[in-house]
Length: 401
Image (cartoon, rainbow, N blue to C red; front, side, top):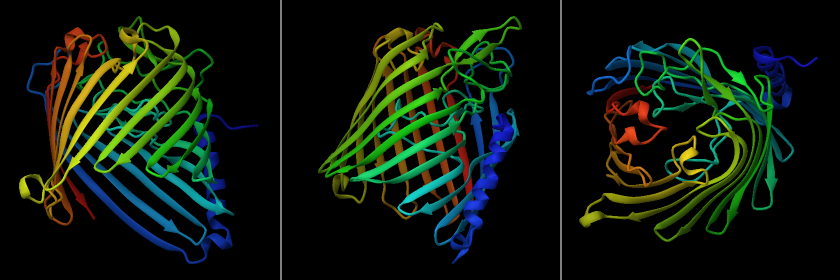
């Protein structure tokens, strides 16, 4: 009998520990540990659009990390403990896995976070992990995905075979800003062949052909972009569907210029009106690096991206016909200062978002980051209308030790 739900995830641990506890794996074992603590304050100057929402939040998050290395295996444990004022506290695991070498192959067992894709902003190819929207729909973080992944070299790249356990998205509390209206319910449902205990299957090959960085992927399982169904209690219930996706991501480097693209074909995805559909979507982008601006040590990276979805106004992602332009200013100083400015505009309805952020190291162990985000004309976009008053100013300090 195969364990289900939480018990199935726990059943992965004995296998993972067995991989690491074998004598070859234990030879030459080394242990490292580190941690970081972040304190972040968020302020929303505009009055809330929905009842019960607050205007300011204090969030504290700790991420301890333990790494154990052997000659033919390694283990990583990284819990995330978070809480604060004006938000929900939680404990989860971003990373909790063991990787062991079997011949030329690597076998990973446990929870981990993966990234597929190439572009700066919207990544349609990136599909493995669910998302944590606890601090807002525009401030998502990935949740760890329990999986078994077998990787080995094939040609000029690497082939990954994955079996992935499903994890639901986490949505904002009623008091949070950047949340749907009405708020999401505490329960979820599944349709179209999806299931809470679904095991997704995925294959990805990635590698290099000279100056070309190429990735090709296939995924079949319960997706992480549910439709939101109105309920009798006035909430919206996430309803997940089973999808199939083919993906291509590519990057070409030519001197100081990088050309990037991500393209997908997805079947079974719910659109904005809740109907299952098949569609194509993609992003193309360019980055141009300018070094030694005005004879200084500072560099400037110019960014341009265009995203399109064949469903246009029925797109669930909000990136149906959108243009992003921006620049990253790299100071190349001892404090590792970077400033990023982006403008994303919907070419169909003129809704747009302007963002400005700065990252700077204050000492060897303390870093500072701040950002401001200005939404404009969100009332014209059905995907973003609930966030029309969520202008945000955010600042945080991180201590690494």
